[in-house]
Image (tube, rainbow, N blue to C red):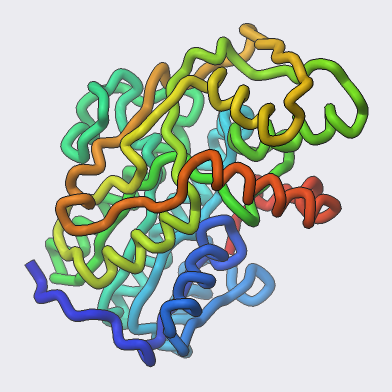
Length: 328
């Protein structure tokens, strides 16, 4: 194990993917914690898929610490329709940033994966050692393979070069700044928008994809940001770390909760021709809990705050398609 040293408040910290859901939450958390030298680079100045561009940027800016949270993300529909894009773009982004961090001797890098890396039929709750023990969920296989490659890339650079590169695997995320594009969003923002627009149009019912029986776990993105800062100071091992709540519920129950927040009068109609995805997915978070971190944001409170953010930013939020694109 590499000796743990807290990140100095004046250290240069690069947030790769600062415009995305997680990246924007990380910026808030870093600023609130008192860090004063935060580096960002938008797509107009740096395409993270191009190694030469990334190498040049790292050589010029010399970040000491890196949060690698950039990527192409989306829900079941987007993953099913664009599997090659999800695989290629994410593999390139992860590869270029990790390699540039190696070339410039970054002090520490935290890579953010996804709980979809685990086998479709994992035992529940899913512990970190279940990685690569079975077949993946077909509807997001491309994205999952790219994320697994990122985890292994950090492990191999750590093993071969001794770099302090670590990985964290969050569960399903939601929160302010989410993607509410119905063609690319995850379940919570999609349902928030559907119920809101049904309410505005006085439609009596809202359609829900799948049977409603699939079980999922949800983590507010501000809780994830706090976990990332915590791990940067308190963790330095080969194996990735799960980040979640350890609590799951049926999608049907989630839909009822969102209905109660947004449009209590609505009826639910389940479109069983649409895929459910993995039957159940809840993470074993005992590892990060043993280190001393726990989530603090209750799901109901988090949903209410997310809905308020959507209402306050409606014109911008409903047109967001950023998660179909590379987010940095």
